Length: 113
Image 1: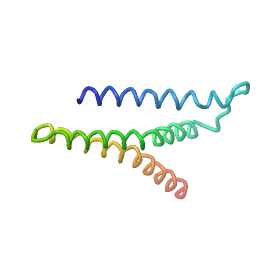
Image 2: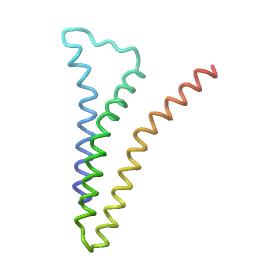
Image 3: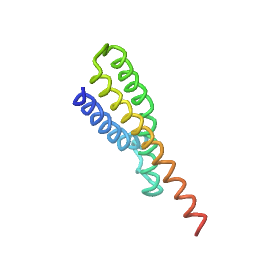
Image 4: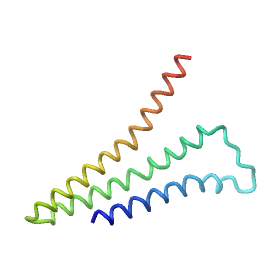
């Protein structure tokens, strides 16, 4: 179960990265790809990861919930699934919290200067 989740997670992350870097090229067909700066690229990657993280997190939590319900009397499996669910939630908080924290730091540094 853990290996499957790890495979799904790494595959999803690699797909997010590929989509984030290939999407601008699709929109810029036949024209030069102009970027305002590295900040715009980074924020587009963060936003893409956030948009993809919501449904992936929801599906993973539903799968964990179904696993807990169907585990019956197997307490060790329930404990493992609860740990996985907690890690999924922590990952979601990190994905969205990191962008929020970076935005707060950026705004405070701009105001200080």
